[in-house]
Image (cartoon, rainbow, N blue to C red):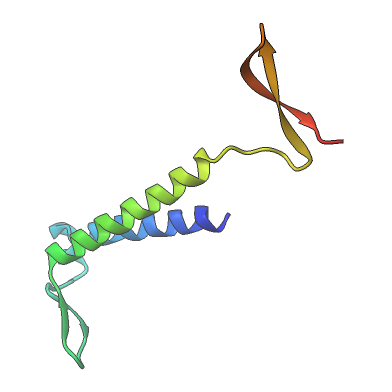
Length: 98
């Protein structure tokens, strides 16, 4: 659950970072580039840096979401039992563990 929420937060942060670099948005909300992050020491972020950071955040978020949904889910108390056909395992089914 935490990975899923983190994936959404990172993905949305990446999208937000991309949106603020668009010319229409930056002019409408008077965002000037390079952005000054701190005065001591002076840290500046250009549009390119923000785009790269946003892209990385978006990709990490998507990877977290993909990992979370691709994990095999078995219910508590259930175990996988092999299905045999002519002596070979052809699949698995869930059976209660009792």
